Image 1 (cartoon, rainbow, N blue to C red):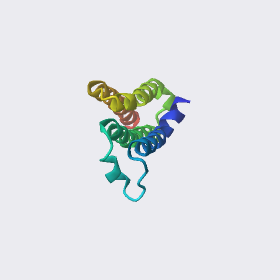
Image 2 (image 1 turned 135 degrees about the vertical axis):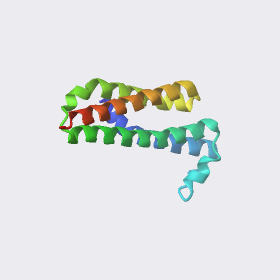
Image 3 (image 1 turned 90 degrees about the vertical axis):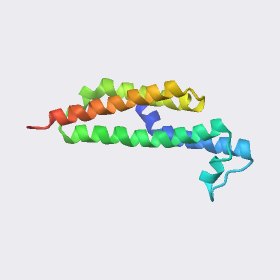
Length: 128
């Protein structure tokens, strides 16, 4: 369930961002949405940034798990690191949108450390 939410998170944030643009600016500009984001208040801009960051983090996590899988690692051994990654990434947009910069950075660091751990386990599983 949490993994499914993590996979849907960027799209959920995009939908929320569209709602925010419509509410704040009266319309959604599909011809130049990135320019329209610049017209949003700071919370709306942070929401957009959280969406972009969610895509980036999803790619990092996917690549880390793929590397571990290709190295032949039993992915069940990565359960705890994956749970911590997912929890930190689900909390990350809240910290981003509300401007809690220190918490946001801490959550990002936790997520990165989980990915580094997964990649390191993958490299250690490679035959010598």
